[in-house]
Image 1 (cartoon, rainbow, N blue to C red):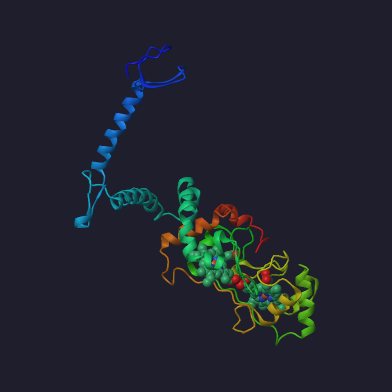
Image 2 (cartoon, rainbow, N blue to C red; image 1 turned 45 degrees about the horizontal axis):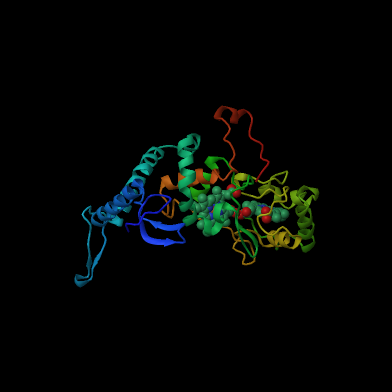
Length: 304
Ligand code: HEC
Ligand code: HEC
């Protein structure tokens, strides 16, 4: 211990090798010692403040002097979130869906918070994010994130779809039309040119699908000119739709029913409004024409 090293003049621990290499008794630097003491103190305080060591004999644990528990912390966080949400919920309660949509802050809130609501109530049929779901017959529930709408893509249309439900009806034609007629119609429709055969008007398809075959939104009749298919778009599939209808009660017909979320009481008015905005925000929503312009220039019915 008393031996000093020739070079550094600092006492060694007595471990010297080869005269050159020695174990000196230098103190660690001050900052290091301070750090060590501080962290030891921190441990003691932390240990006493928070729940720490188990007291196995009484099947308990030391609860800590601060009274902290994970549950309390979670509840405090939840209160904070509720307070934040409550502010938005109170505001949108008395607003129309289009007013909510026009309010950047509110519509952003709905876009962020609507995922769970949509997941719980809609995704089973429409797919997560509205990508549509398929059954053996084709698209079971329509895609909601494109700009192709059966009943219209304005915020009011979407709101009405959710609130009241939708169930397009097309009668079965198997007893009205011959096989050859169904064939001709199916081929014309498959090409996106339903009006290319006079049968389309003669056999009454125009009553529901319109003179030009582009569909009538009030009844959700599909646009037959855009080659976007709700059901099977093959000639065989189209023949089946024509022969057996949609929601016609015919066992071979297509079935496509959207339940009413107001009548069933499954969703509150505020939730229905939020979902309308949420669906609109998928990106396919159409802008509502201003009230006065709508009377002079009706929006073209190009999509279905
Ligand atoms: C049981 C399945 C089912 C559920 C659940 C369901 N939908 Fe639908 N939805 C459908 C079907 C089927 C249609 C098409 C109806 C038709 O073809 O006439 C539809 C149509 C729609 C339309 C109209 C689409 C258009 O092109 O005009 C909207 C909007 C819509 N649904 C939104 C929702 C929202 C939002 C929810 C959740 C609150 C929901 N749906 C829940 C099956 C469902
Ligand atoms: C009573 C009204 C009505 C009549 C008449 C009618 N349709 Fe339809 N049709 C509909 C409705 C409504 C739909 C959409 C159903 C849905 O999506 O829920 C539809 C859907 C279709 C589809 C499916 C389109 C797709 O995207 O998969 C085809 C094809 C079709 N109709 C062809 C015809 C032809 C051809 C005729 C004439 C023989 C005809 N329809 C007569 C109401 C009608």
